[in-house]
Length: 109
Length: 113
Image 1: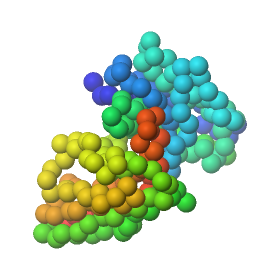
Image 2: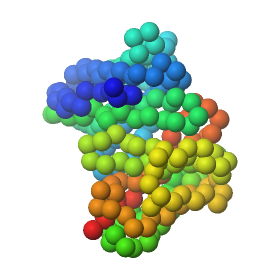
Image 3: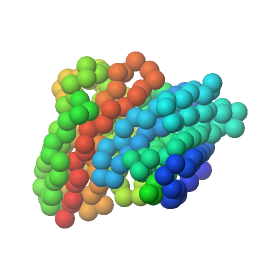
C-alpha cells in the first residue's frame, strides 16, 4: 500500500463550483499534514497546514481525520487560477516528508 | 520569489559526464533537501541535511553525491548517470525545528542522453 494515496483526477469543474479532494495515508505515526499546490512545470508551494480541528484560509478549508487516516481539502467558489495539481503531504518526523502523487484540478470558464 | 534558488534551470548531459546542481537558500533555514520528480510520480525524497549534517539518504544510487558546505548551500554532484535519471530535481529548505514546511526552488530539469 502506498504511504499516501490520492485520486489523480482530473477534476473538471466550472468557475464558482465547490470541489473537494481526499487523501488517505497509511502511517498512523504521521505527525504533520499539509496541502501543497503545484502549477504545471513549476515547483510545489505550500497551500496550508492541516489540523484535526479543521482550518480555513479564505475559500480553502482543510480537515484531518486521524481515526480514519485521511485529510481533505475543500475549495469554494473555484477560480480559473485554482487550476493546478494539489499535493497531499505528510511529515512522519525526522525530516521525512512524504508526498502524494497529486490530484489535478481544471477550472473552466 | 521563494528565497530558494537553483542553478542551472535546465541541464542536458551524456552518461559519461560529470555535472553539479547548485541550491542556495536565503531564508535562514537549517534544513535542506533534494527531491526527484519524475513524470506522473510523486516527489521522491533523496537527501536531507540538518545543520549541515546528513540525516536522510533514501537508498539513492552512489552516482548521486550530495554536498552541504553550510546551512545555506546544497549541491548534488552527478556522474555516470542513466537515461532513467532524467527528471526534475528540486531543492527545498525548512526551518529544521519540527513541523517542517518546505520551500522549494524552481528545480533543475535534467535530461540524460
